[in-house]
Structures are given as C-alpha cells and as structure tokens.
Length: 230
Length: 387
Image (cartoon, rainbow over all chains, first blue to last red; front, side, top):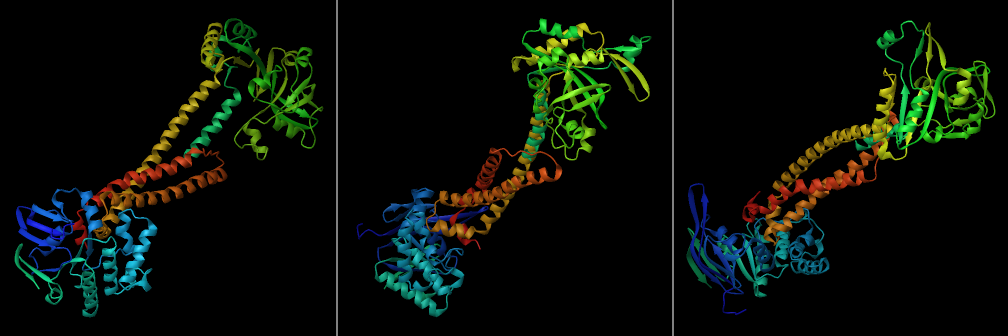
C-alpha cells in the first residue's frame, strides 16, 4: 500500500436519519483523512455526530452521500456480506461496555472473529493464547467474562479486536466504564499498540483521555470544528 | 398413536386372513320371520339354505373356481364319559384345513379314505380338546355325540384371536368350539332333517349344507367370482336364505377403515406438530430478542447474515431434535404400556420412530427459519445499542 495514501479517507460524507416526518442530519459533509499509524481522538459534545461517525468508520452503517475509502476500498458500494468481511478482517472494535459474549470464556471470546473468517481451530487457539499473553491475561484464559474485573474485560476486548490483525482499531469510550487506575492501564496498552504501528481511532468526550492521542479532531453539529496535530 | 392404530387393524386383518383371501364363503341363513309365515304355513319342516345342486352349479358354470368345501354344522353336546362340551359339529371334507388356513396342531385331519368310508373319526378344536381331555392327549380316545362314538384323530390349532384364551371359562362364552367329522359320516348319522329343541319350542329344519367355501385360483378374480356366485344363488333361491361373505371384500373394507383411522390419528399428530412448531418459533423469537446485543457483537466482529441464520437455525433444530428424541422414547414406551394394560395389540413399524425424529428436526428447521432470518436481518448498529 502506498504510504502516502491515507488509510481512512472520508470525502464530504453525509448521514441523515428520517424519524417520521423529520429528517435529522447527523453528519453534514465531513471530510477527513487518516494516515496509517496515526493515533487520533474524535471529541465533541453529545449529539455532535461522534457515534454516527464511528458507526460509519466501523462499516456498520453506510453514508447517505459522499465517499468512504478504507485502505483504498470504496465502502459505500459494498453489499452486506462484503461489509461483514471487512469488519472481520480490517477493523477491530473496542466498546465502552466491553461487549464480550457472556457464555464464552476468555480464549473463546478472542477466537470469535477468527471463527467467522474460517480459520482452523488450532490456528485460532494459538493466536488467542498469544494475544491473551500480550494483554496480560495468561492466568485467566478459561475464565468467563463475569469472573473478571472491568479492566480485565476490556483487555479481553482489546485482544479480540487484535485477533484478525486489523488495519484500524476503533475504540468507543474505551475507558468510560473504568476507574482511573484501570483506565490508565488501558491507555498504556493503546500507547504500546500505536508504538507498534497500529492505527488507532478513539471516540471520547474525556479531554484527559484525548490528550494521550497525537491528533484531536473536534466535531460540532455534524461538521468538523477543529483538527489539531501535536 | 400410529402404533395403536396399526395394532388394532392388524388384529382385524389377521381374523379375516384366517378365512382366506382367495375364498368366498356362502352361509345358509334361516329366512326372517315374515317370510317364514307366508311360505311355511302348514309345513312343520323348515326347508332352507344351500342345496347340493348349488355347489354343482357353481363348480360347473363359474370359471376360476378351484375347490369347494361344503360343510354341515350341527349344534350338539360332545361327551367324554361325564365331561360335556357344547360344540358345533362340522361335517366337511378332508381339505378343509388348507382351505381355511386352520391347521392341525396334533395328529392329523381325517383323510379322504375316512370320508369315503364314512368313518366315525373327528378332529377336535383346541379349546374343547383341552376341556374334554384336561389330563391326557385326546389322540386315539373316543368322544360321544348322542349315541355315536367318534375316534379323535387330530386336534386343531387355536383360531387366531387377540388374547382371549386366558382362563378357559370366560372364552367358552366368546366362541363355540368346532369339531370336525367327515361330511359323509354327518349325512349318514344325521340325515337331512335336523331336529332342534331350543328354549321350549320344537323345530324341524331341512338344511343340506350350512356353509360352503369356494376357493378361487387368483386373488384378482375373487370379486368377479363372488358377483357371479351371488347372481347364481339369487336366481335359484326364491328367498334370501343364504349369505355370501367375501373375506377379501372385508379385508378391503378393513383396510379402508384403517386408512381413515390412520388419517385421523395422523392429523391429530400433525396438529400437535404444528402447535409444537409454533412453540419452538415462540421460544426462538424470545431467544433472538434477548440476545440482540450478542447478535450485534457478532456482526461487528465479522459475522455475515448467513452465519447468524445458521447459528439460530442450529439452536432451533437442537431444541426440536431433543424434543423429537424424547417423543420417540415416549412413542416407543406408550404402546408397550397400552399393550400391557389395555390388552390391545400395538405394532411399531421400523420407519415410524425414524420418520418421527426426522419430522421433528424438520419442524425445527421450518419454524426456526423465521426467527433466525429475523436475527440475521437486524441492523448491527441498532443491535449493538440494544440493552
């Protein structure tokens, strides 16, 4: 891939929802490029379109108009199966409420995306064990999510997001549910991952969390307010 | 349910088969009261039934008739010294057992030589043999009817009936046992006129033959031949003093009733299947709603719609499969219980548990499809937001 070409490229993206007769415009022509290896925080007050943007970036939703290129592929023109494929292979999700599957243990949770890619059980198990060690959970590999603390659960979620070695990691208020200690640990992990070359996009309204990133993008009313590199 | 139905019809079919599928049975019937008054005013001898000429006519004119078994039936007391049994004494021919599928269990049936000579020999029905000779074999012994003694040469097999003969006393009322003697002997000993002294009234009857069995060479011709026989009998008998029974026709009728019975039982089963299927659909819909968030997570992690459909479909089939397995176990156990408790015959065909299991799994697929598709069609964003 051409290193000069942005890994994520939004070109005058609009997204509107119709609620009955009223049409709500969540994003009003947003243009944004993100290069490989960046660590970027998207910030803004609630209702500014952060979540909508994250859903679009995560290929869970499609723009009403405009173009979204992820690693050179135009997402707007893909069908549901191809979008699922991209979510599984190129993107890693980290949610505020961890979103682990309760009936599966740590290793099985990490293996879920690999399962949908049709990897063999043995290969998936090796990857999962490697990642569990990387996030420091080698002693809790057969525990169920409810047996783990919030910080530990979020680390499982990060390991799961890393399982398919994605182009981009998307974190939605990843520290929002955690105490400050665990939050710091998670942010430390993010720094480490970014240092290792992962592109990281996180959504937060906590400025102290945003400070950790290298670029802060602020949104207001579905439009770009500021874009500061540091 | 089908096992019980199968068993019930099996019993009836066995009884009819014992009469022989290729046979046509003609019985003499005493004319009904009003006919008797007009035709028998002054004559004290009641003359009715099948005549010897009827047999020769049937044999001579109807093609396809192989053999004919004529029989005279007399109701008599049969004695062994002091033991008495009320029985039907049947005067017939030596090929009766093969024709009527009623085999000899012990000894032999009387032979053609016995018949030609008009010997006093007899074959006893199994039940009367047991009651007349409780302690010893009846073969070679003699039984007495009126003033005549008959040598026992054989004992017949019990007539196939459900499970009647458990105590002896009770079954004696169900069926009158038959004792077989050569037709020629019967003619010599009894003549053509029978005296009956029943419940105070004295009757004289002239009956040549009480029962004639006509065997047809090909089962497909049975119905045609029976029509010809009915026609021939109608032309030669002014009164309806006979009755033509076609076991094959009865068998067909029984099969028809069996089919209706099975349809009724089957539709009950189908309705319960439908109810069960809707139950599964309900459970799966609740399950899908409850796990909306999990569906969202899986979709975000790369699950295609197909993967989600498959997951919930497998769960539905597992659910209905376990139900089906339990149902098959019950379905095998209940007929046994019914056989044991209700004294009914039940038959479990090999394919019915297999079919039942397959159908229940199929119900899982059919009724699980809608909830599974609903799960797959969910918007991932909405699903992830779901609490």
